[in-house]
Length: 376
Image (cartoon, rainbow, N blue to C red; front, side, top):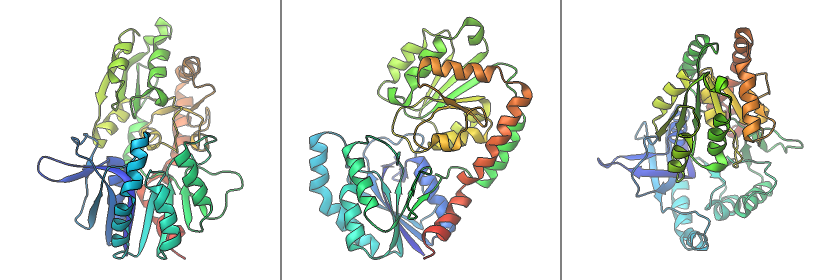
């Protein structure tokens, strides 16, 4: 069976001419080779230097079909999407003739015209993946339009979380991020951890204010001296335009921060293995960030915002801590809750995490694609 995936995933060319792409998506597609003979990935080709998190495809059975870089918030960006729409539709239409089914990953700028094109003009099997916050009350106009169009068509749509009055064609799908081997390894790592000594904290994601990086730094800086002495190191993994500001801000806190920039997946997992707490006090539009499940797999206690579907998987004081308020005070209250955990309470919390994590394996995800999306 042959599959076409259409997305806005960033791709880059390395110095030796190899094509690499945003790691999380490429990893997901590589594992789909267990179910599909050939996969065509129609996505955007950037001219920038590839980040360390970018990955190559695992096989020549995955064929990259480049698109021009499209998207953005300015009027010029919007006009470019309209101008390039015929070129994108032509590339998609040509590729669809070679496959049995398709997936369109939304929300994305090109989704504004690809959703109606695929819904009205394409008869092949396919489904839409909505990776953002499906229940967002005031989404950007483009997201709102795409969500409305998806509600008006009949193909299945995979979404983050589960919601009241969810129609049968909207299927709750967890974003895969773990192999079965990593699941087993994570269980061993978590079993050896203790929170009775010095603690290591980590954050993985874009370094920007909506994701909560500023709140993390200011919250840790406002802890008491005694509480700060319990924290050995805070890892911040990722990059962004405000990185220099965050680095300067962290120097005034009395807490040791380490800014790593972009890292490979294996390097990020090594940080999870050393860490006890994963912090993400985000107010950004989220589905369910994969980094939460990844960190939990290695015994990190998540302290995260109760937005979108995050609260569907993280239950306060059961398998993590949900922030009652996404503020410095809210973060510190949750941190103090972790600091007060007994050895047995920590072990119980980690044990409860394992019940959710199998849903985030590639094996579980791939089987659901075949059985729940393509079986009709």
